Image (cartoon, rainbow, N blue to C red; front, side):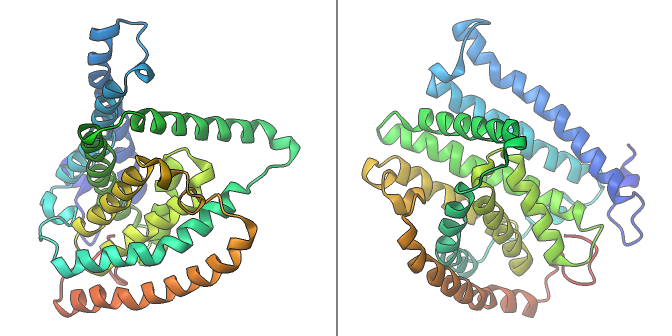
Amino acid sequence: MPVKMLKQDPQGQAHPFTQLLVFLFITVVCAFVFSLLGAIPLYIIGGWDADMTESPDILRWAQLISSIGLFLVPALFYAWLTGDDIRDFLSIRERPKIPFLFWALIGLFLLAPSIALAEYLNRQMTFPEILAPVETWMRAQEDKAEQMTLLLLEQKGVVTLLFNLLVIAVGAGITEEFYFRGALQRIIARWSGNPHVVIWVTAIIFSAFHLQFYGFLPRMLLGAYFGYLLLWTGSLWVPVFAHFANNAISVIGMSNQSISENPYFTSELPTTALYFYIPMALLGLFFLWRTRKKMQNNHFREGSDTVGRPGDADA
């Protein structure tokens, strides 16, 4: 694909669907190549019959390599293909301002009641009998993901915690944000100049990509929040930081037994807790909407370009 065909100019020399197909093709190729690279240590140690679930250390290595190959490399390569400066295409040129990071973290805590409520509602999801095979498959995917997470966290100690933070917080925060908010959100925006449509569509894809459907709603809300952070601040590093902070809190919490078994942390809430969480969620969203002005007004006042702004074809 010639570089000029993907050039992100006002006229759009390539149709958005063409850009999306190219991006997905790059993703598939990179995922295949890096999955092989990630499996090399496993086969060296245990041979062809080796099972990575038997070794948390190898699982961490494989997950990190897989994240880099599935998310980071495709985003960087696609940005290079467009012919634009990679830093401008992915909105990573400017260093994030400390106040932006602070308010992004505050917003994450304000969103927490809504996340907990969404997860509680999501766990109540049931299907009619005719869709029983679908429900069985979804639960199997959820159980598999939970098993992998517990395997990563079963070992204790500072070193293990640091490695888990590297893979689950730092690695996922950077690679997934580069892919979904940095590249995919910009491609989707070619179809719509409405930033809200762009952000929510990207958030839906982001959540579905994880194949954890009993956590679909809370992950979608988080994805939308990360998308709005990019819209409000114009810097991808802000949602990267928020993504890192969210995952780091989860890793640290799940590494502590007393915290990990707390029903408010696991969102296994009693029905009576809804009377508390519903108003808290509404209150949190209200203050989050007010908080966004701390970043949005400052960003617009500086005149920086942003993602998905009305009248801008890109996101």
